[in-house]
Length: 224
Image (cartoon, rainbow, N blue to C red; front, side, top):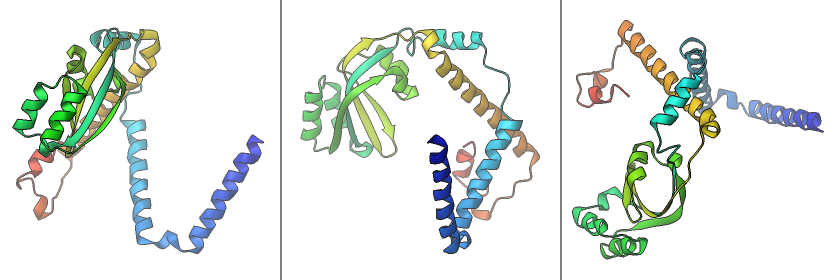
């Protein structure tokens, strides 16, 4: 049954592909651009995997060191119940922030936002330390019930108010695979950035006039 299912799936894909070819979609400008973009990304990914990323395995010592250096994620891991108010960042004027500073419950926060006529979307739920934005993990590790921590996302800000906290440690044996994956990702990204730096130093890069490095803003965005 499994083999027949796999064959049927291949047949269905082939039939759809033949229809797409009959409709001459393989000559469509948007399709050609999408294919070229996918081809470029595939080549970059394979190049990085085969010729840039380190091949040595993450050692047990490295994993244990990371575990010990981040108790807020593991040995002292916390799980938070929170109410999140999503607002427009532009609405968080000083007067609103003063009201939020003294709001120790979701009811008080809701009332303060309503009085300031700030539109918001509200949701509640549970989040563990590893699910939080990395830049806020340390702050959350010392936060108390009633505290509000803000996380900006584009033009919006999430006001995360803690309603309860529970400590639920995560053992090394349970988290080692995740730690290994994270450390490998960080190491790979560092290796890729170093290779790009070397390539830029050797390359002769020519910019169109409006993108020359002398233009304001281009220098600031170059590291990205």
